[in-house]
Amino acid sequence: MARLAVLLAALLWGTTGTAASFSSQLSPLAIGAFAMGVGGLLQALRARRQIRRDLARLLAMKGLLWLGVLAIAIYPLAFYSAMHLAGVAIGTVIAIASAPFFALLIESFFGHQPPISRRWLVSMVLGVAGVMLLMEPGELSHAPLQQQGPRLAGMLLGLLAGLTYALYSWVARRLMDRGVQSASAMGSLFGLGALLLIPSLLITGEHLFSGVNNLLVIGYMALVPMFIGYLAYGFGLRHVNASKATLLTLFEPLVAALLAVSVVGERLSLAGCLGMGLIMACLLLQAREPGA
Image (cartoon, rainbow, N blue to C red; front, side, top):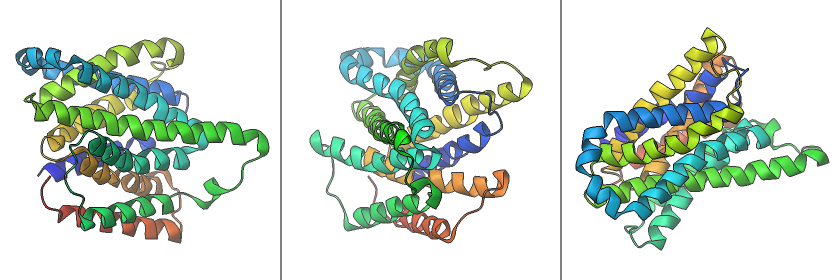
């Protein structure tokens, strides 16, 4: 059930690229800050009673809490900037494919990583290879010299996004391990993260509320992928450690690719089809992995 909750979250997150394509006026930074910010406030509002009950525990771990809050605030800015500078495919792939590695490193460094199974290693290799194959060949072509600097910066920001994603997932799981309820952990982390993200809209939020189409896009992004998606992810993290959860979210680019083909009208290459098959193999292996 926990793995299904993480997969549901990844499915909903996989719709964000297609949804954003219906509002080309909006800055990717504005979409990310608004969706994550409003979604975070909704989580905090929903969990207000649980947060009140767990307040003493949260204050006792305020250093850990603020580490997760900073990671949440940085993640959408790094992720959407990576897509803008390095291209959608490369930015997304680097962020999502690097997250399981960073989660494993964080858990190993802090001594909370259970023994790594052969099944986990095989599924990680299959999943990362599959995500890489989903990239369009044109995205890997050599860019003109004047574009190499921005592309390199975008790739580094993609790594930062992967690191912060793994970090806030690990923090949320640690809070839960120390007796904080799932809703309290996610609500406090994302609620405080929202307070850092929303002010950035003063700079990036031009056209955010201009037109029904824009309102529908940002409303969907905030309510469905960021609010409902992270509720499901928080439930899953209660029973699945961060390294396994981030590996399961490799389902996200698979969903994004399918929607790009069926809704946006993009074509998927033979390599992309193979990549989808490898990701499905990764997820099937994970479904049979013993509990976290």
